[in-house]
Length: 341
Figure 1 (cartoon, helix red, strand yellow):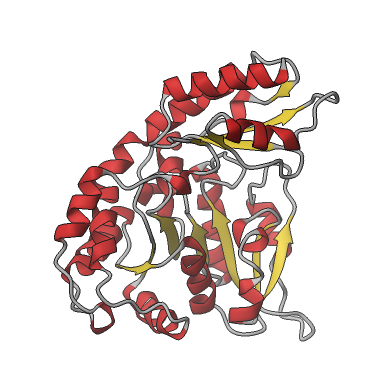
Figure 2: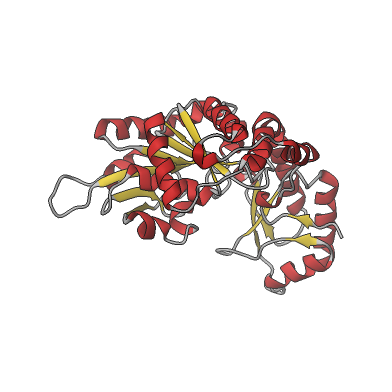
């Protein structure tokens, strides 16, 4: 049975071209540095985001944590948003792996504005921890994007204060499409960046960490420390190359489908959402129906061949992706009407 899966864009299946490329990939031993397909992917990735070097890692969480570990010293404090993925969805790894503490910033729209960051930077007082890193996100976990001017001002502040900036760019290319810029335009205001190949770009596994050559050399050793050294990983890199060469171009289609999904959801009484907040491929909405248990929506949808996650913080999140088309969205809305009306 084919399911319509709106849980995330991590559920995307590799394309036929990716499967063929994986089957035919030329491989070596990446720990020795002689897997030619890994090397091609890493050079391509670095070139696309305008950084000196890049490294393939198993996941976005690994990429972010290597960023934190490589930039900081134990006992440092890192500045990030209170709803940032590193703070909320990475299992406290920054404390466990890097021995750093988090200084989270509350912002109504989750954007780290320079004036908020400046207030959070520690002084040289002997009692205070050192501010070792500023962590940004773009796109944000709430499905919106951060204007380049804001990132520029934060980065200028960071440079002035001698603090590196790491970007969690899990959906970097979605942000670039939404802003009408290139990924390199965004990443120029960072010292390192992590971006996923296995979300909307459809690769089966993996993310990229990019930065200066010196930074990546240190991060490569840290990756080995974490058990992340891989052998014939070129089989995975082959799909990643196609993700970067071909799949970036189609992300606007997911954004278009998300806007269409939001428009159709508003046809249903009790649905509350802000269309202006649909900036990438995520639709957040509230089901304001006192007569209906929202937890039932997950099971009832599943019976009809639709996969969704339950509420989080009072909101549902539907995510469009390469395996969801407009006809699927119409089926989802028709099914939702049957369940709720």
